[in-house]
Image (cartoon, rainbow, N blue to C red):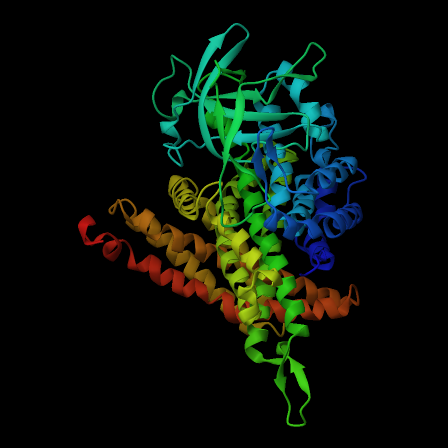
Length: 592
């Protein structure tokens, strides 16, 4: 089993050189917050991740959560790990000061979340869901709801969940059937929700469920959905958990991966109705849930990086230790000396660095929007957040499937054996392209709301920014081949954008048919953009004699590999976009 070591040098490089965190904090007038503080925070988080969470990763896989008469029992050791997490003040990192939070920038939350997710993905989902639930209440709850629930959630004393999906309402939330009936100062909730991550456990004294449901007078469709707080335990006059609410986990899903994370079927109101409290206005619940969707989807994209990093570290150590080649004198050598093994490791390493860079840069755009000096600037950064979010979620999670596959392949036959640990990473990664909106949903979002809705304006701005980096690379000596590769990828992106705008109006199937190829094209292009910027920054630091020269030289090589082996994939994606919908839609349904 591999240990987890936080790749602090790469994380610091991205934060300092690509995000330019110090400049961001200065413009936002965030005194005492800078890159040095970020390094200290990551160092402390890495201790918890490496020493406490990572050793429990395989335990969670082998001894997942189980349902008992007392409710869901989490993996042995998780409760103690969660107590360490709370004692360190980690739940409050980015939360508002008004509710006990530290009010640190979103980027620092992202950098720390990568550590939790890499060290133990199943465990990390519990605090991640709590962050999302608290954010929704903070944005849309009444002052009374905020005072009642947020301090305990921000401290980590209570955790939160999101309850959207039902047996007949997956992506199609217009089909939600859960009911909410007014009853004095609250509502009685009845219905069933499925796929509820960390819907029950014994790590905290209460769980705050956010539940989508319909009022008796609700209009049909998504405009008739309201949002409710439904706690596991109702509170007494002192605001402490007291009476058990009519909300129970009735079964646990048996899953391919993330066994340590209980995925619950939740039943509300089997004994008369679960008490719930309306969040915000009636019939606006779906919009409230989507308030936190950018954060949630970027965080799932980050999980793609996290599980890829864990798989890479395991494969790298195996490749250095596994003796498989024999010299003429009879001495043996490790498999890392074989070119094809190097190819796989380089592909994993380059993919991870590109993913980390894009995830952190996209996360920082949320901060730039939040702390913008004027409304116009905030709107510009928010538009970039909206554009990058489906790429981060879709591309990073799809690429994670390939990276974790390569990790298993490096291990050879032992990769198929559970004891090596590689198989767990491969299995755990598989859910990432599905939850918080499938790859297809992200792709449709990118081509629809983020491109067609504004006639490709935001994509054009992104392409212009990438072109500026390409020109910088072209002007700098020694980057000619990489500059040309980026220019060709840029051409593919421009052509794909033009084709989408030209064909979507005349062919109703075009956008849906090409959407995933379109999204993956821009994923590889954005990765190339990040790696080009990384190469330029590494070159400048080497020229000035700053930084770790060995790390910076490796960064230059990794960036070149990305340019040679991954960036050309934009051409294949463009070919699929050019093919359009004809062959996809040609068969009659009964011919499948």
